[in-house]
Image 1 (cartoon, protein in one colour):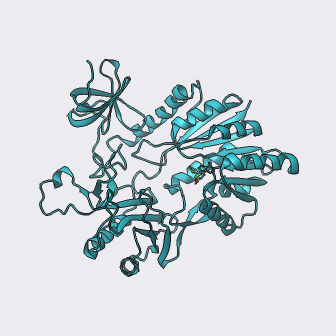
Image 2 (cartoon, rainbow, N blue to C red; image 1 turned 180 degrees about the vertical axis):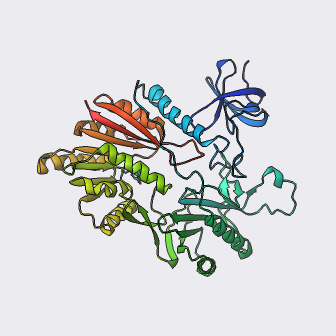
Length: 470
Ligand SMILES: C[S@@+](CC[C@H](N)C(=O)[O-])C[C@H]1O[C@@H](n2cnc3c(N)ncnc32)[C@H](O)[C@@H]1O
């Protein structure tokens, strides 16, 4: 069968590809289709055709796979948030483990690396401690809403339809956020509709209401509400903040971030605290953290503890080591390990994250963590020099937790030249993990990889790899 663009075909889904799409292989030619489960027989239209693969859009399911189950969320067939709800959680974990193994073998060209079973998330719904909902002047209608003339199309607050930047599904109930978040979301929606002020137009960049960001502290069961607007209008946002704070005693902070930046970024050029503190507190293990509206914090608090627990287990510190944590964010890993090493240095490029890291270390009475601001490419050589010349000491262990793009190849070279005895590599992207491990494998044995699930119902998987110097 020759696959042609814009034509539709009956296809059998035989596997799930990394990225979450179903995979069909008519006559061996890979076709990737969203919203499919292995075992489905589907009718799909080809939207993209390349030399060695094609992409299709699901038109309808001809025969459902026995693996398919009813998703809990009413939007799960349309929303880009969590696309794997149609698969049982045990199967999700199996596929995630396989994706790690396949990436290591095919991208990293590394054989026989032990990959453990995935550590599951205890909560598979209501687990996300941060959700960001977009406001749009263009609401995307669900199939059952199309015929309803009463539904206004000029406002929606929710999540994007995958592959679109201007179409927003009006989300009434998001299942991966704790339930009170949905009540807050609904009150904000009602207030916006009544306010008479327009939602942001994602194409012409006009309008007032841009995002609603909700953060939940699991340890204290408190919430931060961050209202992101295009311009300042204090009276309006203050009225909203007062209504919310009065109704929900759980709300500890209401912020207003103001930005007219055209990119879809919710970080304000100006930030105003409308109620309570300009942060909420959260706990990881025995440590307390202040999280401000724009701080990075792992989004599944309890799974994060399991992840860091694995990092500590792999690091197996005895108390006298010098540790360097590359890509240290708000300092959570150094703080987590602080009681187990002599000294820990964190390197992080985002200034506000470094400020948060220092504050959080102080908040927890920690004195053996130092945080350095800058690009690792520049800061790591300076740190290396300091150790070699001034301190005449080695860096014993490196923890590396890069963003999705993985490590810069110059940083890999620097790590190899520093040659710590042990590396613990934390990754949120199996593809870049595999690429970087291949480079490190010239001088390190990859002893084991432990996947940890932080994001149920998505194809995303976190992994911790343990490397010993050969
Ligand atoms: C996946 S996060 C890890 C954060 C932290 N380890 C945690 O668990 O919360 C990656 C971090 O790397 C930082 N980063 C990205 N590129 C960097 C670079 N070139 N130099 C230093 N830090 C960088 C990002 O700002 C981000 O905070």
